[in-house]
Length: 187
Ligand code: HEC
Image 1: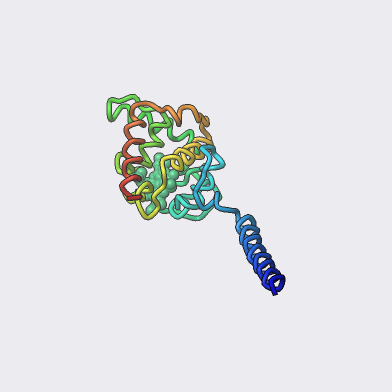
Image 2: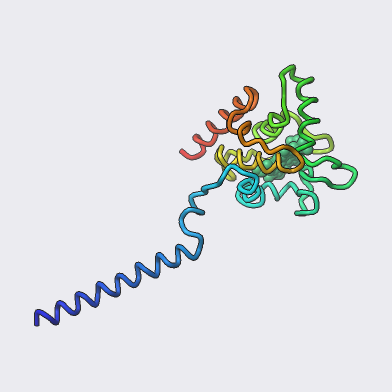
């Protein structure tokens, strides 16, 4: 009698174990929990994933021949309208911003400003209708935005991860603003 109960118990444990094992195998197969937690690396590759995914940038921006969105400026080289990709274009825009604001903008500052405060400089021929990507529903975290910045730099500019981590005062203020908005959104 005792051994019969024992055998049933062992049998049940085996079934439970099998289910747990299948569950883990499926989680591993589908990319695991890491992807769900949004762990992104601050790199052009990490940023590319955000640009064409969670960040929804691709719904308004194409990059050269990739994508078909035209609501926002192409971020690559495209026709006569876009002779410079955004990494290089940002240098030109930064000069304009320096003259206009009296502050010293470098290319990265222009990129940060474009995302943090799209209305500060509205590209000619476009409307001030870029999404606020650090607020819901897109709600990118600062780290994800930094990754996107690296991706934008990699389009014809110099990728400078150190500068992205320790940017100028102009950018730091915008970082603080985006991080604060993100915290509010997550509450
Ligand atoms: C709802 C549409 C929309 C989405 C989504 C969007 N943008 Fe934009 N973006 C625009 C428009 C329109 C402009 C041009 C007007 C302006 O300058 O604000 C623009 C301008 C820009 C510029 C300046 C381009 C230049 O030629 O100077 C950058 C950089 C940029 N967006 C990056 C991004 C990134 C990165 C994302 C995703 C995280 C994104 N945008 C998501 C619509 C969008």
